[in-house]
Image 1 (cartoon, helix red, strand yellow):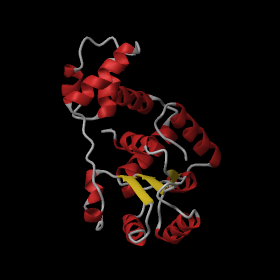
Image 2: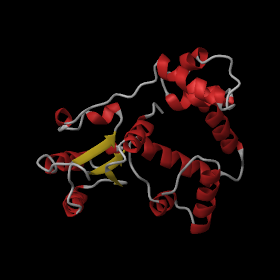
Image 3: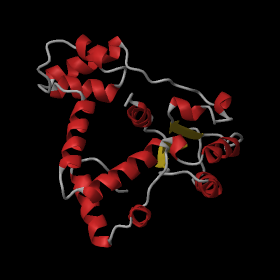
Image 4: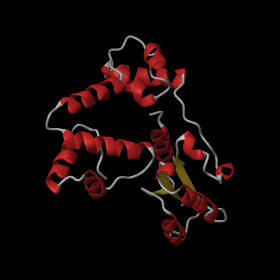
Length: 220
C-alpha cells in the first residue's frame, strides 16, 4: 500500500537502457538459470541486463541472497527487488545492496493530488486531510482523494455483505483461506484451496469466479 511496487517499476522505466527481465517468483532452483540467461545476453556498459523481482519476501529470500552473491562478480547486471520492511530482516545480503525506503510524505502527497486534480480525477478540496487519514499508505491516500472513502471501509462493507448472503459459504471459506495465506506471503494454488475446503470443482470455480469479479482475489 505504500508504493513499493510502483517505485520499482518506475525505476525500471527510467532506466530503459537496461534490458529488464521479470522474475515472478524466485526459488533456489532458479538462480543458476537466471545467471545463465544474464551471461548469455553478454551484458556490456552500453547494453546492461537487469532482473525485476516484485515481492522478494513472497518467494525464497535465501534465493535472493544467493542471486546477489552469484552476480557480485558479474559486471553490467542489475537486480531490482521490492520487499516489505519485515521481510528485509531475513536478507543477509542487505549491506551489499542500495536500499531505498518508500514513504508517502507531504511533498509526494501534494504532487499526487495536483496531478489528479489537473486530470479531473478528484474533487477533494485539499490533500492534507486525506494524507492524515491514510496512515502513510499511498494506495489508501489515492483512494481517499479520488473516491472519498477509505479503502478499508469499502472492503469491509463488501465482506460483510458477502458473509450475510446465505449462498456464499464457499466464497467466505475461500476468502478466509486465501487472505490468511497472503498475510504470510504464501501462494495458494486453486486446487490446493479446493481440497483443503472440501469443495467440488464446480463450487470452487464458481467461488473463484465471483471473488475475482469483486476484486477480492487474483488468480495467477
